[in-house]
Image: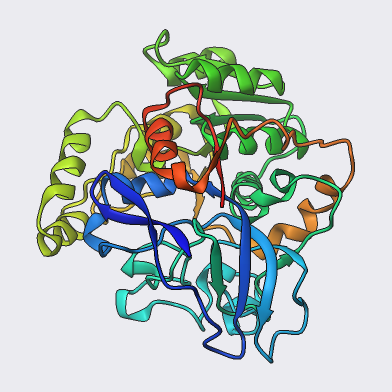
Length: 394
């Protein structure tokens, strides 16, 4: 089959690799019909190569048609249309029975001290071949795949794999009460959907921060107020002015270590990515090289006794935190990988009708063949051609 593979820092290519096969009675094989490029994939593209091997298949936002199932898989069958969650969870362990599917004890990568295995996402998370491919082996398929109906194009349901469920968790973790003011940092796909979901969940006002014109325009189409960092130097001051000096009730931090505004940390990240793997891992895990600008903005913009929901991905372990300010303001912080299947029942009714209340049909900007995936990575990274979300078609 053909699959998108990591070949080195800043380099991916579509190669012919072995077709996946059933290995365990709980496996399924899915023929991929749509698979998306995630902002997290850019971390592998640029920074986290020390945790990858040449030839690793990337991608964790897939959907398609079931081709084959193992004998212990009974809730789906060949011919079913399914979305595959990005985290691999069993559904029956201590963590899963409590809804913490991103911490599944059956698939935890204990050797690395990490949570549940993820598709296409480094040795830290199990080095499981990903979904930017023609076919995907799905472990724990007795629980994971989400059966979806016909009647809408793939893109209506595809983002249950990550974007929609991650954004829903981000908004729920923000502890939004009706009428609240919510600030969203970053208007990539997760920021876009988090802002819309915040409004859906009752926020009276959602303000979002970015500097890419196409992203700002998309948010405005959905009733989001925007602050452009190219024209506003002090975002926290602007938020205070917009909220009568109090600050936002909640902040959803949807940028993570892609944040601009920390040139020294940005340089450190780039330098770490060029080191030999062993040294790069040490730099990432011990020295701490994440960019903190978005978090700093979030902490300064939220009101006292407010909540910051961190959904942007961070990779370092020794980042400086303004603990005195956090303690003094009495903030609540919530964060972590999305527990995908925890939120599916809440979201699915919003997708199956014709109304599209979350505006899911207005997110994808580029649909390209799998063979052109390297170009998709490049335009997504460079924010070229109005690119906000890329879907690959095998």
